[in-house]
Length: 462
Image (tube, rainbow, N blue to C red):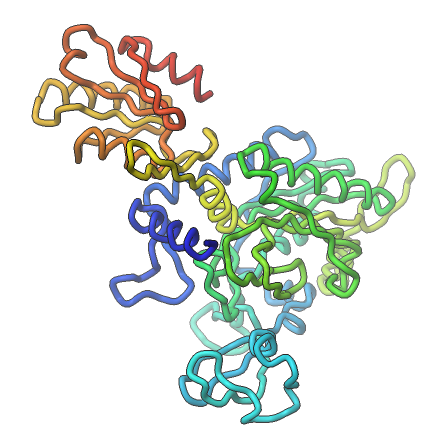
């Protein structure tokens, strides 16, 4: 049943222009995905909702947009150069690579010390070579010469850009603790991915906050952020039964973290691999990480102070003391949020012996708010009026004009992409200057004047 739902989501995304396979006409590039017209609108709406809740509506969060390429010393200080590795095994026959933990799931009694020939490929049954470590960061070179002095990395996370700008923020904005920095941006990890559509990819987008607090306030602020982030998903329509909090055990925590709690979604995967704050662990259930909220202690600022030689301590004017703040980090994935909202909104129902598919997305997330449809596309006066109404509504809403099918097919198409209202222009409209407005969820229709359409939609959607 879960796999069937996932198949339906993947099919819907391709059919309706939400998500396409990357480089598809060339056979595709594994684990890369392109967002189509509806997908990019949904993605942007999620980012806007996150930014509004965490930056615009708060007085203690400042926004940033840091460079993807950073000084190599940043990644030495953060520990990524030394510690950000995966262990993989390559099949001697088909040359495919697998994480050691994937192989151990199938052969739990075999250890990596067994040597070549003890491990079998998960796909072709060939022999797997010995485990090898490789760094998960993508390497590149900056400048005209490709040598060690030109080495740069594509950032594996957005957090470090905010840490290294800590002094700049103190000098320019003079914030008082507690305060935070927020950023939405791309990150890259050269890891062996496990499929499950867009759940895990080499290129992904993060929504991250680094919230600086006094050490004695860290536990309290961590709890507050866990609740705030959990409720954000609920407020945007995620069903409560599909969302849960999972606190990390001591053996799961990263070396710098004092505590971490994941917000998990019940994805319809047969087997899920959950990306934790510090690495990975696998559980054969549908629950997998949507967002992690961690108490990173004062590790990051201390590390960058040591490697850069700059004083990154915070000076308390009242107590006349300097110290390294602790950092609370809510870190969520945009792409995983898109997938979770799509899955959660997917709904099927029987209407006149036919199956109606509806994406019941929250009004703030729906890619299109209103579609204007001419009942008869071969009547120029009807099409012209419908286009005029569409153009007027575009100034206030994400609105589209569509005349590429019968009215029944157009309704079903808009239901599948989550459009809240359909406005139909018909022959009678030419006489009484009224249109038919159809509600997505109830399918109820209401006849209202053209001059009232905008106010009607404002009342319903804003």
